[in-house]
Image (cartoon, rainbow, N blue to C red; front, side, top):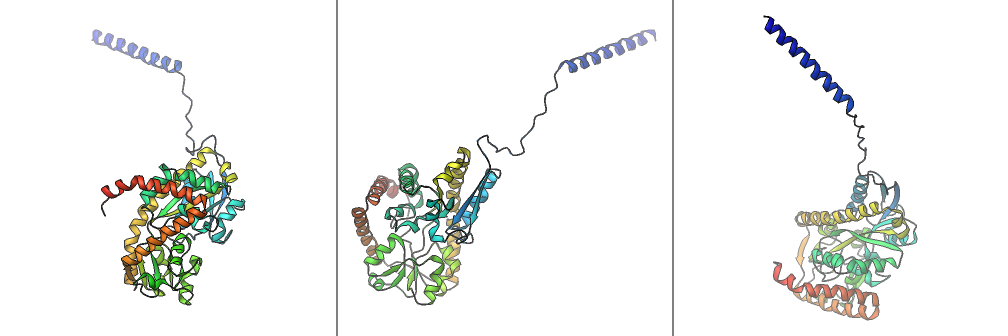
Length: 369
């Protein structure tokens, strides 16, 4: 009994010593300061809140053409934690759709969501940054743009107007156009009144058509009133929305005049320079994301749109081979004329053509039809 009591006493004092030692160590160890996690982890030292006005040439309700622009402003707000507020304005809210570029160039608005198709009367070389007749598929075009010198040429051309441009979305190949009657030969185009802006319109004029550039929003009524006999517009998903099948049932494919379409975001130079490097990088990153997303979305949408158009009464044709040959033959004439008349067109055409020539073997041997 005495021996057990002694062992208990020793154990008690040993535990007491260990406990006191632990407390001593705790007192000697400094208590770390509380780590504060920022409420917004994207904050950067070079970023200040900034709000810019963006005028759009396309309504946000237009599939891809306008919807991508509206989504871009949302993406930028989320990515910047609200420090980059780019306010999307519908066509006409700040300036008319066709005047967006001029408003940006003058500094009247900070930025624009638009197309170089509106700029061809200023300089035909702008056509390289919207979509060219008989041009490449989108992937090859992007190869030239980002790795073949195209982006530098674009920056130089737009820079003359104090505008900073970037491709911020793409459309897949457009439809070839809507017509009130069937087209069986290139002679059928002679004398027809066709809404066909841009360089493709130059091709049709050489075939005897009377072309014009009626704004897209007026095309349906122009058909209904007999003002036009035919019109190109956009991709099938957009053509479906505008209901052209009701007034011009013959729909021709492929869209030889615009096998790809570049959608642009443009900034007035001073507005762009107000952005920090981080904010500029965010814009560039979102535009890059838009390109892949819009390409995937566009490819997914068109089969549905074609089926819906057919169900609603559209008569879908492929262009007769003779007509396509006439288009391509006259496109070569347009290129020769523009190259002779416009040094900007000639210089960019040479860059574009050299890249396409270098890509020819790869294009033909490795892509299945």
